[in-house]
Image 1 (cartoon, rainbow, N blue to C red):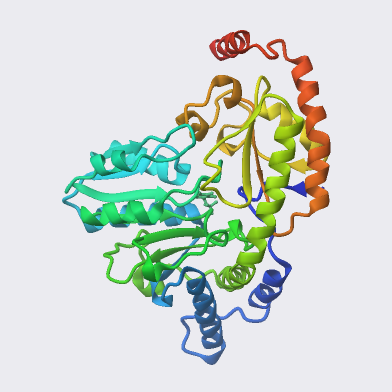
Image 2: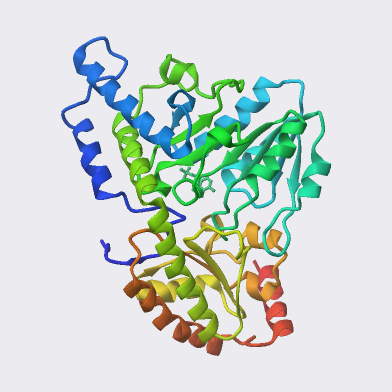
Length: 402
Ligand SMILES: *Cc1c(COP(=O)(O)O)cnc(C)c1O
């Protein structure tokens, strides 16, 4: 097993902070009581869960009663969308965007088969929304607007509060998938228009299998998982105590490090991006570089395949992503980059590097050193090099032969 790689795939998942492991372990060994039990042994676990809930609420500027634990970000998105619709059965319209995570997009697609109408807002070639298009899509029949805070593939940040003000005018529930935003952007639910917000532990140096849904006090909610009275009746099932304790610590550390870590990551990300752009011909940055997560860069290298770049990077022990884990290995490009209307020549050769607070200058410089050679090698092999029209023909032939 390999574990000394240069890990630049932090938007896919992150390393669990050693401090997080340390606080979590006793709840797997000694303190195994059920937090709902009447005895002291269980009660002390319940107390630890309350502390963890306060730690998590703090990173959102929320009240602890507004936090509901889930098993992951995907569950949070599913639960929020279904709850919003169940609470307003008379309304049959949903607004979302073309660039959401599959945890939102595929739920919306399924709801279309159940009589809901869904508006998928478009994005421009920078990956940004058109607020006029949003405004025009909203009606009194709109039950829910579900829009991500920041895009996992490009890092593009949406103007969430401007969106929320418009949503509120139409009385719809506003859900935000903030899985990529929590720990990277300061958030404060006290002054926000967001009604429900999804986050996930493993994207912020916590463990996999734990997430949370913020539900603003007063917002009507219908549980997705029904059973016992846990989570104030909003999500049944005995709490995943070790993971909840871990998520609390992870949130505390994210909040503690937020300012200094994001400044550092931005500097390293910019160093990587600017050097690659300066040393490699025919490459472009995808997404809105003015409104972007500090840790993410998505770069399109023309005339070559992103997957081929990833394989060569992997030989150097460098982990990156083509931004679309679900479609990797196929010629199907990312739905996010496609929605941005990128030309075919960039669409197929796009790579995402996503950093974290553990990323070092030496690691970034290693990538800067190997990338030009990798791109040059692949372009030398490419029969379509530096020629948009023949490259495009080749892609079309390849697609036709699938
Ligand atoms: C990772 C991710 C999810 C899914 O979270 P899981 O905890 O892996 O289910 C949802 N939305 C976005 C934007 C993500 O990046």
